[in-house]
Length: 170
Ligand code: APR
Image (cartoon, rainbow, N blue to C red; front, side):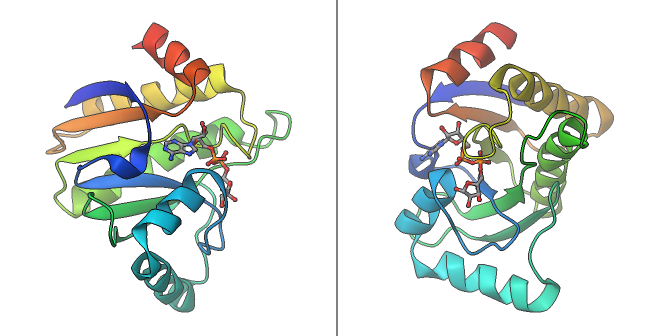
């Protein structure tokens, strides 16, 4: 599994799945969630509503998969990151779970290329240095633990601070 780092807008990527930093309602929001729903169109929200009707929303640390609608990607994997409180509320464990569960879902759908935003580092205020470490470690751990068929994982940084942090760590 190759790990790549780019800066830019995740909604423009032609990969099998882009990961969305969603909220537990799955009803869209701001940040990358807003961009994905805005550019992906109503098909994504309709698919989210179906999941919500079936299983309620999506718990923190878990992930669900939908069509990517009008986006160049095929699928959107919606995962819900933890809101940063003080570091004593399982935030690190839950953020790690977002990456592992998203990869597990991609694997289950035989996807080869997956792109992640910097989950929880915007509205959810997770400290970027720690979040970057957790994200990279989780993806490397997944590649070590499983005979994965996922060929490429791309970290997409929208802001320079995250890019510099990931660049230093990778
Ligand atoms: N492409 C890639 N990354 C993006 C994009 C984009 N188009 N837009 C924003 N980002 C980056 C932000 O710069 C940040 O580094 O995504 C990262 C995550 O920030 P948020 O989108 O605010 O997500 P998060 O911190 O996980 O908060 C989730 O915000 O938008 C709401 O509905 C969402 O309630 C949920 C919460």
